Image 1: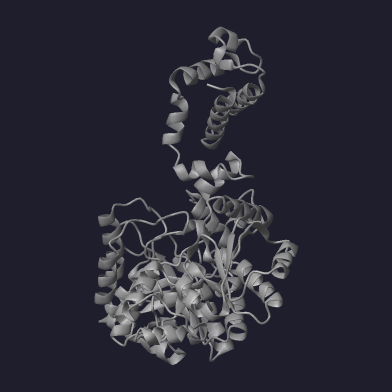
Image 2: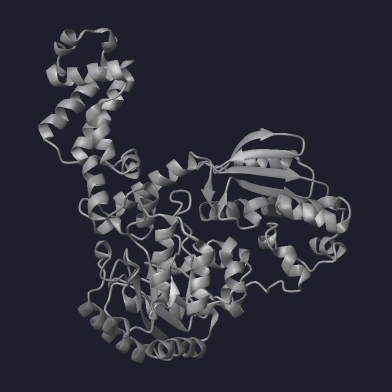
Length: 561
């Protein structure tokens, strides 16, 4: 065994010992020995135990560990510590700038056990309140995680969107008279992408290539006769393809739809796609109404088209209010009044649903019963001050391990609506996770089921759950399902929207905002809703103030009876 692997093992051992708050002298001894071994001009594996013991900064106890590692390939003490540490916590320790002391706070104080949860916490600004952290440290951690994600070659749609829009706008400055559009997964608004695809309706010319070389945020990797491959500093791949203007729209459809969508489209046309003058013309040739790019996945769009049931997809302007938001009463950044003013004056909404964390979410300053009453007093004052704008009294109530909500009935009955969500104990069997959710859904006070699977894109798959049974339970109990608009969640997955709609379940596009800036995440919720085929008629927060007032009142009447 070479020196470097031995040194890495000792470094990890010392970090885990410090994480588990073992003797500081022992931790330092092992860390120093690891550093020393890494710098030795000879192979320590070729030395006897006695010779190792004689090397300065190693000594008897560490020499024994090195000998064990050389002879067995493992270290019992390290294996025991790893067994006591969640794998995600070990991975967090690999993030630049995070030593064992900070990781201990993240793990034990904040209850975070993997990189995805840590990234989500950074987006919620939860780290700035923790001991030893601040806004600058939080931003550095966030950037380090984004760099780590990028090294895997996959990106959240939201990570690439701003860069993509800047790039396309810059292209249009040069290609002023040319046809140009995004294609591929990015045009379909897929939540995770491998890169950006752009189609240009002209030949590749030297002027454009020279222009690309002037862009400091884009590196040209390879140039061919009709394509360019480039890359952003963050590692986002960009594929630019060129075609003749006369076959631009054919290529626009071919390169925008999934393989399944294109195959079905060709079957209906009866041949390969011909050259046309617009996308709409191709769908007319297939005896179909125009299918929006977001729907071109080969999932359900043709079935809806045959039934003449293709929805008018929901738009941002259809939303009349914002539900599921957090203020400084729990772990938000802005005061309740600041959020009200922003929703009313900047977003021109009719209502706000405040859903601060409930008492079980101690890590997020969850509201005790007394603080619930105090917050509701403030809400009454704000409703008087800002009428006709209305603040609805909500809570994001934790679904406990047995499926119950974490307030007594006398408190639950005081809310206008309740978002019920799981925030702890994710390690469950599918049967347990499903029954836990269904019990919460059957609670008469549950209005909305929050982020049903607990997934965090690119980092946590979520708990296993029979999503059909969960949707069926929501249908039976009149519970709305959330489309959590945070771009790290987008949960419930758009692939289940149609099943929910078929069962008569309403969906709600909720930003889960922890600041006024978080309201803008609604954009990604609308994106996911459109992919799932949601129309305004089936979206809870597309209801007007009068309509949602009536909706909540009917729910309360059912609860009382």
